[in-house]
Image 1 (cartoon, rainbow over the protein chains, first blue to last red):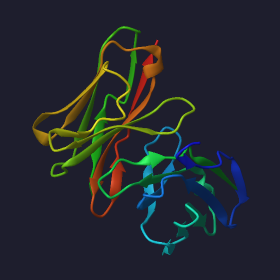
Image 2 (image 1 turned 60 degrees about the vertical axis):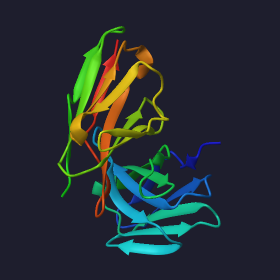
Image 3 (image 1 turned 90 degrees about the vertical axis):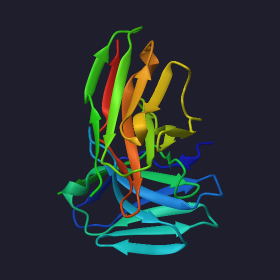
Image 4 (image 1 turned 180 degrees about the vertical axis):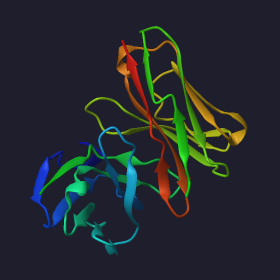
Length: 111
Length: 112
């Protein structure tokens, strides 16, 4: 079993729709959770970080964390074609530890 | 905003040769990490420096890989001798208070 699991996709949504990306993790000691966006050939770019149960909103993005279910998600509202990328879920044990990444979900937003 | 510069951006070498990748973080960052993504796999941790010391090198695949961080500033990752399975994209990252983990643009290594 992988430590961080994501559906590889592609997840295809129409422009303006809500894209929902999901991630599960196996280490119950994980404390920090991150969503990165990676365009093809580029480096991962931090979108959201979340550290406690519940929702965290930043603009069109909402991260949701449920530690009991070992589940973290990312919602993208009003999806734009420019949101088309691979979204990487990453977790770490604490702020100083290394990140463990999922394989990423490819999102395609169609005009 | 924090920045990380990596070079070269691409490197193509023959099996058995040596390659050195370099990471230059903006100054003042104690925590520096190396990661690697090989084709079709997830990004995986290689090692973590705190200043010039190796805090965690549990992800280094074997003794053909040698990482150093001179004076707690820039870092190098040497692969000697390179094998075909070393091909992939090597990322360097720093950790900042406000921006979390910031990644460099990566070095794409191809071993032929």
